[in-house]
Amino acid sequence: MRSTVGWQAGHTGTPLRRTSLERRELRTDDVAVRVDYCGVCHSDLHAIRTHTGEAPLVPGHEFTGVVTDIGHNVTRFAIGDQVAVGNIVDSCGVCAMCRAGQENFCHEVPTLTYNGADRHDGTTTLGAYSREYVVRDEFTYPLPAGLDPAAAAPLLCAGVTVWEPLRALGVGPGTRVAVAGLGGLGHLAVKLAVALGADTTVISRSAGKAGDGRRLGAHDLIASTDQRRMAAARDRFDVVIDTIAVPHDVAPYLGLVALDGTLSHLGHLGTVTVRATDLLVGRKKLSSAGSGGRPATAAMLEFCAQHNVTADIELLPSARVNEALDRLERNDVRYRFVLDMSDLPRNR
Ligand SMILES: NC(=O)c1ccc[n+]([C@@H]2O[C@H](COP(=O)([O-])OP(=O)(O)OC[C@H]3O[C@@H](n4cnc5c(N)ncnc54)[C@H](OP(=O)(O)O)[C@@H]3O)[C@@H](O)[C@H]2O)c1
Ligand SMILES: [Zn+2]
Ligand SMILES: [Zn+2]
Image (cartoon, rainbow, N blue to C red; front, side, top):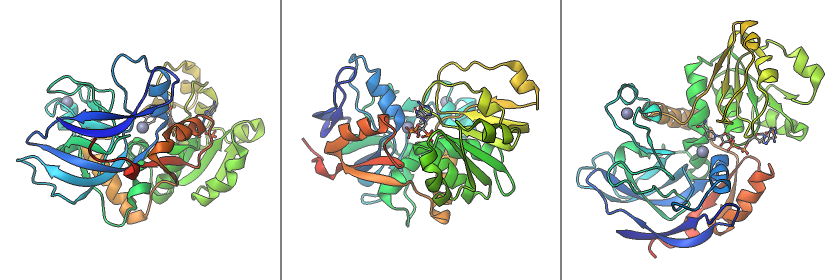
């Protein structure tokens, strides 16, 4: 085994603590990545807050770094390459979804970057709040030149999670898009929708984010608490991307969807209650999405390099991870924390 250092969750609610951890020796199709930057996703917070302590939990599933070692059969990467990895590190490779390039929907469940089960030895995967990660080359992406590696890290979960539905729903010039919840996912949804040419509106409960919305390229901001403006925006948007991190009534957001349009509900992944008539009136569609397949992830990175899209980040030394998590919980981040892992040694 290879040893490295990372940040591990204790029982529910206790701070993460620094610990040494093991990575597997490289298989023939593995690369070892020195993790330089890892984004802090709200999903990490959900995982930490509900952690029971049975299996070790090291969060972190959107990161960039440098290849330090390659397995015998790896041809796509060389030592020294800058790379990016997201929240899927393996899949069966043969089911219909994998064959369609939608490894994120693999029938055998894709292996998650943390809290997943390794397909070969069944061990629990440990995430990238650590200095080294060992990953199959197929789920490692070259980081395009020109993308800042710290600000690009959040593209690998937050970015691709909103990119897939934007593309699948045909967003482009002339499409009217609304993004509900201006956080990590939401601000990248705005930037990507704007870069795709869409007329883009932010729906936020935080009126103070109006100026940010415009700086991100949005054409309008509607406060979700403003009943008059919400009513005036009825049936206005072809696509509504809902990234709100808590359970909520989807009816007000379905109300904003245009005739034959779609609400993509991808922030809160629990049960959704919907009245059929809220879909019936306007033939509206309710959908969801999560993560990205390999082709979409690679395409998203290329698009971001071409259009200069990265996250707005606050970079913190990894030793301040608990402060980042607490502030994320309080909605006190504009718009993504990224941990700088250079304060950790690569080896124990
Ligand atoms: N589908 C997937 O595969 C996938 C992938 C990654 C993350 N997620 C999930 O997506 C959600 C968003 O993640 P994120 O990292 O973008 O989180 P985030 O940065 O915390 O942003 C979430 C936004 O939701 C809004 N919000 C938060 N609490 C709220 C409340 N009590 N009432 C109303 N609005 C509230 C806020 O926007 P305003 O201040 O603008 O209202 C906040 O900025 C999380 O639940 C996360 O687990 C899903
Ligand atoms: Zn995530
Ligand atoms: Zn599969």
